[in-house]
Image (cartoon, rainbow, N blue to C red):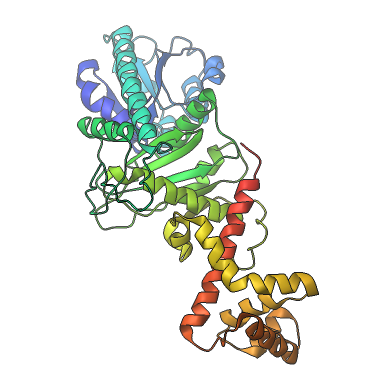
Length: 432
């Protein structure tokens, strides 16, 4: 639960006489609570995101306010309200304090002594409770829309009409629970016109206390961006609204990684969608991109084993998967495996029996456009050896490898094998 500082000020500044003195760049900060704090020694108890109010009752030292502001900004408080008139005056606020607040985008506000602090805090608490209920219900509905574990399957040989036609023209098959969630989201005014969904790997699902803490830190890092942050099955998801027909700005991954528990951060992002009913499809795309990033599916030479964990945050979009997009969205993995076996099975059996490398040689031969010289260089063999292996490949597969269609068929078979190896590596991951 959080409220943007700017939104609150627009509604309440006149009622409470609030005036911004410095730190305008931080008005996009969200606050999660309001507290009265007088003793600078208690700043260490803040968790971040608080709207702090002080009267300056304990301002006994010359640089008390400077040290107080430094301590609050260091604890990532959302803003500081100075209740001036008795213990603090506006003239007590030095240029050094104002400059610090401007440089660190830390909002510093003034409130007259006549304002009752209890009234302000009571309203803030009521607004936060209301916002928390709205956010909790929205997250529940989004999770219900994503949960397609009970999606209806059409009987063999029959066509079933979709429950929801889909605004984009593509039919969407939804369960009754998903459809009810979609309708309630729409009634609540939650219907982004164009969006992507990003799912992140944190190494393990987060428990409610942990996800609330991460949510607070990430929301601060993403302040001002039009997005919804929620958790599905313990993993953080970002539903980000995009401008019409434009690419979105890059996510500040470094800032998110700094606030995330693990040392590195991986994410997968879906294609843009224009219909909230496509949220389950967007989730599958984002998960596919995350698996590809995690297993090195789209990097050369990483077909058999997943790469080491990345040292820097990375985000792989679904569109970067190329032909693997078709494989991830194919409903019949058995058919894909049969296709790969049909084209490459004989080579693998020969390689296993004779400790040969026919399949590897064929793959490089196809990738180099049929160049024996480049194939030999890539496989660290003599050109004659590469030529012999290709002749053996043609003998075992009964293929000439001359036609473009035939070469493509074998390249696709290798792509299917790499795809299956990637999924197998994913399935071997220890349960989070």
